[in-house]
Length: 381
Image 1 (tube, rainbow, N blue to C red):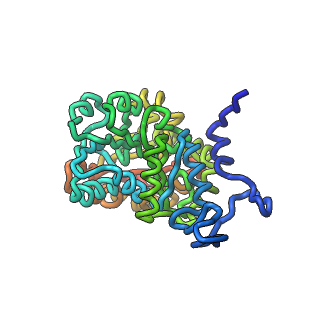
Image 2: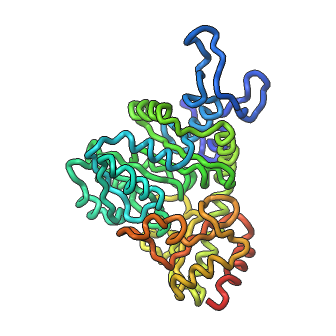
Image 3: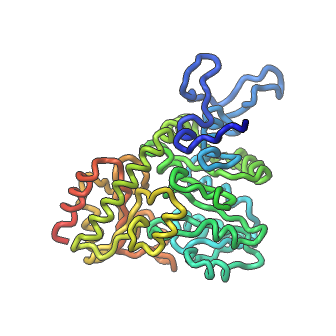
């Protein structure tokens, strides 16, 4: 009888982790070591040097693969390190189609660094399949998408784009905003899934890391070589923090999503708010796609105030529970002004975010307290 596949809630707690064979410790140890003793030259127990591999990292990589329903997982020192390593599979002259609402750090890497080495990028609206099809070129090698996007929360139909992509064109999905609990792109046809583990996977704003999940073994071996050669790897303590944080992923994401929905509904009815952008609202143009593609709608939302940029900046400075800070996905609620903070690198580009936009990373506090904080911050704006 075939072994029944565990649900993601169970995978988050158990995947990649076994009791320590020497002590019986139920939690994966933090192997805080840089090197490993060999019994004879080139004879070792699977580990030589911690840039190449580390047992704590091995456990986390197995967890990442299982969470995304993939065959392989690799982790890195940051989300940007993961993206940079993945892009090294491409060659000068290769063309990449990118969403026109992409994270500012990703845009900076693509536009300011990788373009200098001969990669070609086109930024298009990935929510429109005809636009994606029109952007395909003979040199196209990858379609890069975030869904939901950061910070405008656009959605891309992962399955439709994967079906549209010609043979030899990879589909890479940044799944940071959704997390593997809400969305599994490999199951929808994507070739690569990328995460900033700093966000929902870690979940506690206490570590920085990145990850790639995939199925193809040849591509995995290439990425594994790059991981070691480039060396942008996380330390064992960072890996352990993500292992620990991921155990409550499903519990946190349920609460993030519930809180965000209630806050989106509150803001949508507020006199000072011109627009609320949240996939869970029926007013979102891709609400039906979100219902089909995601388990729930997540903890991220954006809004625009009627008072424009000045009101948005003032609002972001007035909150008390919502901390004014970059990043997202922690248990605590954060607020930020993307135009001047996380997406400042896009300010003079064709994909600049609206100056009046405010982004909320809704935490897991009591929703009444969060709404009270937003209400007082909006007063008089």
